[in-house]
Image 1 (cartoon, one colour):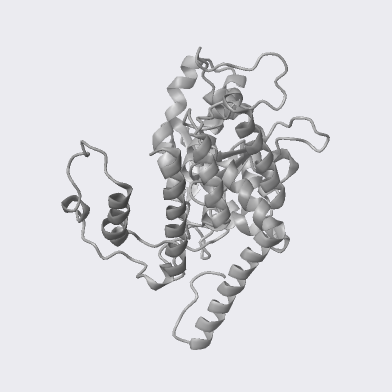
Image 2 (tube, rainbow, N blue to C red):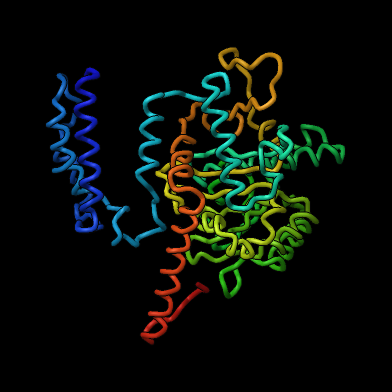
Length: 409
């Protein structure tokens, strides 16, 4: 495909995408195919000779489309939404155009610096404390900052590694040497409720610590008292609490944990407090909902997914840390093929040290497109419309009389 054919096919593909969105609400949202359907429809080996774009397009319509769940349909209510918008798609196109592997600043300075700036934009938009900003009000570099992860699951793993680094530093301050610490690593305990996303427990399996699952209360919340009781029992059994995840909007019921009370316990017990707001965090763009999140300013890390409720196509998971020291110390590995900037390094962030992969896409472009083309007012209007619709639905269900509201709306 040369550049002229690319222009032609690109325009055709834009039309195809636009027509899909114009008609998606008329399609059954759920696929009806049986497992293994595609294996019988496509060749079992890659083609030896090039195939035409027309044949590929036809296969998308006749073979791929029947097996798709239409997440963007207004009739889709299967899970939390996979958000998206045309501005985000355009941003993704530009990212694909550059096709960089932006593991550090020197790879593409604009990719790193736009992410730093946009994450500060977004942090301010949702009302995060200034500790989480990469750039202070006086224009100097801060200790915290944001980074775009692929998913909230990745964010869980990353911050848990940072929390372990913080716990190890504390053990060293007590006089333990490296050998002693290696002997007790398996006694580190991370705390979750029975409503916390499964990503938390998976993260403990990956880093090799213990997971303590605490029963939630009648409103499906993790409470201060329940957390404190679990920690006290574990300390009596010789275990080392080091991490707790509180949730702002659980997956099952959108419940909000006792964030402030959990922060009290985290402070007194020297635990890393991570707040997972993967879905509901987007609501914090509206100031009237921020009282629901009282306590987030006391967290070590905060995460939400613009790809769930903020008009940004998957994947885009926004993670902030109040102090990146433990994160960078835990994940930094130097090699000859990873050059560092010489001389002044203010505002130089190597985001490979803030995540699990080395390579990374230019994800901030699509978020930048969304925030500029909708504006803060447009984003808030979008969120408020959905909240109003949820309250309307609650009223309709209550008026009907046949339904029970299982959790606060």
